Length: 40
Image 1 (cartoon, rainbow, N blue to C red):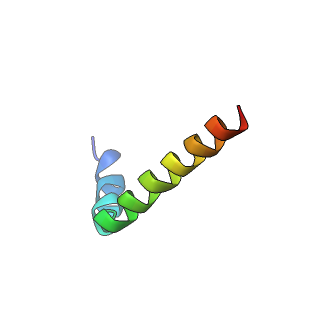
Image 2: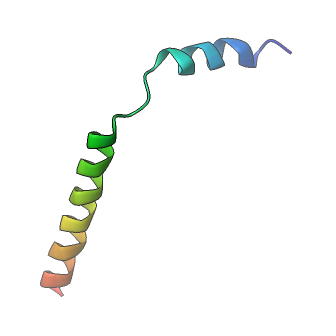
Image 3: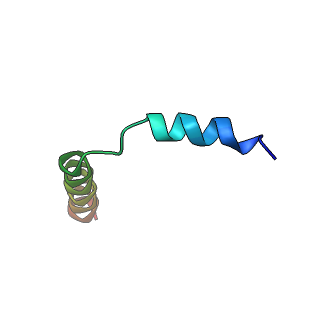
């Protein structure tokens, strides 16, 4: 079945997320959790 081949190509074209971006999101998540804990 060639239905999934084009999708795979598009996904391959997109570059993987950079490590610094993932770290940033992780910090943002921690900050949000911290804010929630302060609110409570």
